[in-house]
Image: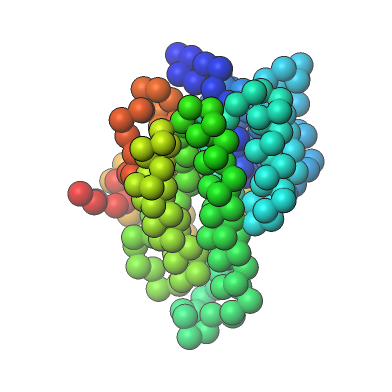
Length: 256
């Protein structure tokens, strides 16, 4: 690794498949981290695996849709490491991901839950992280979005709407707070293969359909494909990149 994030203080909100990859890559690049997730055991396990000495990582319970929880995570970063340079919001709710119907059949409780986490949660994270980063002299925010924000699928309408909303928020932050030294970008992954897929097989046909849509046929994306781009966007090497959505999808989407 190149030390791209040497001594940067970054919050990663949301572990699991992609989130674990973010934590490992950011640590390898020299960052000091606060890792947060609603699964306390997952936070403990990832923190112990990556930083057994407890020198560079602090783990915390984080419910991204709860304002007090997010505020506490930001305070933990500042109180422990003295500043906040970056935030990667990676958590997601996909309550309607495998429901077969469209908007007519959509259970509103599923819609409300997706929006509570994926839209309200991202707003709360930005609301509390931006002032801390401004106080630190500036910083970078990265959102994990999805190519579903563009694809117009016949299902997953709540999820797709929430991901489109995250992109609107990203552009707002870049415009409003750019003059204060805040950059904001989004990464839109396609199918990223990680350990959860090995533990719980996907529905019939999903993997085949995803491969057929990719221009790169030799493999699926991995968490480190997302993490490598995120590290750049959070680093000084990415300091002239803002208000952008970059797909990591093997060529599924073609956008100007």
